[in-house]
Image (cartoon, rainbow, N blue to C red):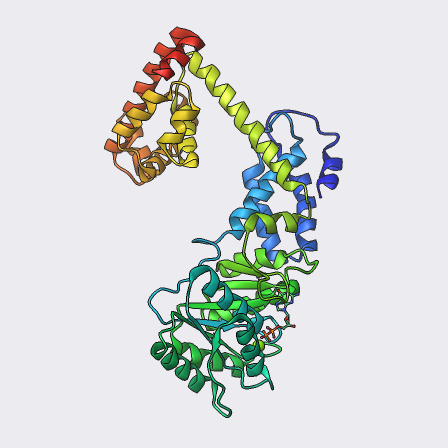
Length: 441
Ligand code: GDP
Ligand code: MG
C-alpha cells in the first residue's frame, strides 16, 4: 500500500494542509486495501468516510509525503476502531465461581480456545479453573476437552453420557462451587451454520449459568461470515467479547475491523496456532498494520508523529519567546499534559513549566478538569481562541453551554490563560537564556 500511495503522491509536492483531492486519491487506495483484507463493504465505506473528514485539512508535516500522512491518519483511526472499551485481554472473573461461556460455530476453535484460556487463567492469574464440555452432538468432543485438560493440568468435569447441555451446565456450576474453583468454563457445541436449535440450546445454557463473560470464538479467516456469526450471536445470546482464531494464517484480519464496527464488542484475544500457549492478547496496532498490509507502517507512522511533535514544539517555543500565549497554546499544553499523564512529566519536558505546572496544580487540575478545559476551548470559535479577550457575557454563555459546563468554569480557564500569557511576556523579555534559568529555579 505504501508504494501504491507513494506513486499516487509522487506528483504532489505541495506543502501545507491536505486537500480534499489529496485525501480522496489516497483513500481510494486505502479502500481497496481494506476490501482486500476482507473488511466488509459497508464497514469499509463508513470507515473511509470518517477518515476523510479527519484528514481533509490536516496539516502536512515537512518530512513525510501527503500519502504517508493519510496513511498515518488511517492507521490511527484503525487502531481506535479496533480498540474496545476496557483493558484488552482482561476477563471479569471476580466473585468465584465465575462462569465463562464459550460460543461459536463448529470448528471455529471453541474447545481449543477454552483450554488455552484456562491455561492462561491458571498460569497468569493463579486461578483454579474447571472446564466442562457441553458438546453432546459431536462424538468424542467431550474427550477432546478432557485430553487437553490433562495436558495443561486443568480439571474437567467428569463425563456422564446421556446428559443434555443444560444438565451438564448445572452440574458444572455445583461442582465449581463445591470444589472451590475460581472460574468454570462452559464449552458449548457448535453447528456448521447458525440454526434455531443451536441458538435456543445456547440460550438455555446461558440462562442457567448466568455467565460473567460470554466469549464468541470465530475463525479470523472467514471474513464476512465471521461478522454475520458475531452479529447473530450477539443479538440472540449477548456476547461480552470475541476471540479471533487462526490469526497465524495468512489472512489479513479484516474481519476484526468489521466485527468491531458491527457489534461494538471488544476483541479480547487472538489464537495463533494449535498449541496450548498460542493465545495472545489482542493488539490493535499489530492488526491495524496487518490490515493495511505494510510491515514498515509503524516506523513510518512514528516518524511522522515525531516530526509533527517537533514542529509543534518549535512553533510553540517561538510564540512563547514573543510572549504570545492564546487559547490554542493552552489547548496544546492541556493535551500534552493528558498525553504525558500529568504534571510531573511535563515539568521535566518544558522549560519554564515549573510555574505553569504549579498554577495548574493550584487550580486543581486532574484529568477530569483537563478534559473539561479542553472541551471549553473546543467550543470556542477560531477567532475566540486566538483572542480570548473578546469574550463577553453572551459568548461566554454559549461556550460554557457548548461544553456542558458553567460560565464560572470558563472564567477559571480564562484566568489561567491570562496568567500564563503574563508569565510568557515576562519570560519572553528575558530571552531564551532567561527562560531556561527561570525553569531551573
Ligand atoms: P470447535 O469445534 O469450535 O470446538 O473447534 P476446535 O477447538 O475443535 O478447533 C478446530 C481445529 O482448529 C482444531 O484442529 C484446532 O487445533 C484448530 N485451531 C483452533 N484454534 C486455532 C488457531 O488459532 N490457529 C490454528 N492454526 N488452528 C487452530
Ligand atoms: Mg468443540
